[in-house]
Length: 363
Image (cartoon, rainbow, N blue to C red; front, side, top):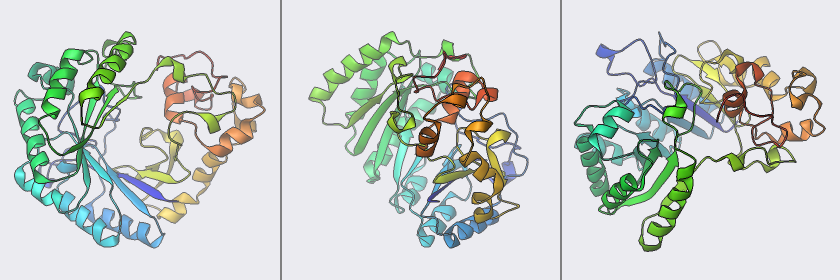
């Protein structure tokens, strides 16, 4: 195993600790996190230290920290210091929270790349899409300018919804980003339906008709820009195309239960950050067993070596002639299978497979 991902308890400082986890400074309407599950007893800092020591002794090369909101974790500086001392490399951290100059200065010394989200500069739009206060837009712009001046390597991420998917919004963002000297990348993508979206996704989904507009806008601005601008869209042509199984699926190779596992804020261990507390994919509890015991445990192995004979007969995978080859390569996105066909049909084909049936639910 190469990677452990820890979803930190992003609670406010101890005296204000709420009975939940995945807490953020924002409440984005497109968020993919499971914010409904109540985490009554988040891992303590001492328990996290113990996990890091266990990971180190097991030869783990990479230990990622994701949120929630990392900078609401009241011991984030101590955590990064410890990880640095232990030789764990943190490539990037993401945030949506306005940071103080003191926080920026403390973070800079770690040399970690920072991603900061910015979907719009419009106060009213941010209030409705992120559920933030009226002052948020001004404060986040101030934070970005101070990060830019600090010398931290950082990038900006924009998630488009129906309300922000227009060239006027993109041009305003572009003009703002052009005033920045040190941003290394601006990534624009369209919101995708998650397993936990709190609203009817069709009401916020970017219309398919806008994809072409976005491509045209990108081609126009990239000609005259010296910024590294990237766009990513989800479109129907990416589905039901592969005739040779997961080996030829577009996108990065899935590492769930093959080269990484995810420790949730209460110590439960799952195979993928998007699956959260879905009991079907919980492979252990870090409070009860160490990393080696969980990784080599019966539950993890059973999921990794799921036999074709165990597949439901109604799934087209049950009699597929390339099942062994497809599942051996391991590039099947279980989260997307659940989105398309429901939890009970988790062993259906990946939506990118040509044998995937019509989706029961829109992706």
